[in-house]
Image (cartoon, rainbow, N blue to C red):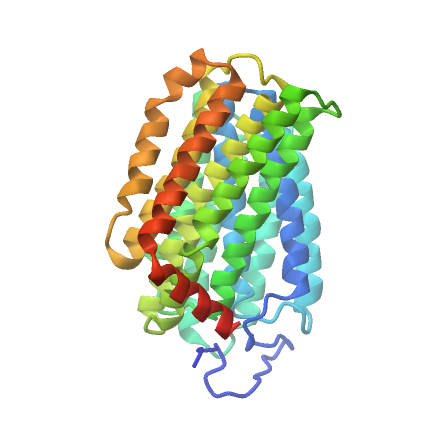
Length: 398
């Protein structure tokens, strides 16, 4: 049986009227919230596209990390509280509006809108903490964990606000410190008090992977800029093939097995730490890899016959490598074994970056597609009947 946060089996009404979550279905309001995160991802890609330098990539990834941790916080929240009941719905609407404003600040998050980004980001995180506090009046363990998270959040927001008065290396260092301390908070304040519905939690992260992959599709359209030639068409098809391969590597087997392991984990500390490590932390390199690939696709589609510079070659090939390394770490966290073929392919892709600089962008994209689909063919064959059993069992249980 799936565990729910309402251990008594009864719907419990906290004093403020928020209802603790009982079902596993991702609600329409959660999907609505995620639509704003689509804009955030698009803005991160745009920031890096407008500044295709190492500094621009670093800035885009720092912003992405901050926004990811915001999304993670609300994923944990809505695995405790029903977002569509009581006053929670209205607060979520407010958080959506604030997150939209944060996303609009992203292109200038290190320049003219740096302070605005930090302050509005603080509003988004404050709403998240407030809902957690209001939903846990009778749960001392959860409240203790939320108070710890509130402390790390306040430190992070203060550092981001301080960073707005600096530029260059000092500003980037303050951003990195803010992100590190915020994400490290759950380690400092323990994991026993958190709650989640494991099936819902795994599904929510699967959906955000799809949303991120959608950004790659959008990048193809933006890169084409309303034109269609033979070269652009070939690059677009290869771009879709690469995106489809990234979808396959996650959803064919990985998502199914990982979701089952989370559901079957011992409730409490063990399950919470598995969710924290494998989903909250290790999905970040996957999302970052997808965003980098989207940047590489955007530039490749529009300039398919030109050579990519080293930064953009890193975005395309290195981004795909980062995505695969996220998978390697994800598997190791669950079953303590290493997926050798994905690790090997990630290393090969990184080695090929200097080669990608010397080739037309279309050829570099074609090589990346060929390599990852060859790996998929090998894995599908090696999994054999075990893969079919896992997928049949998933369909039967759906």
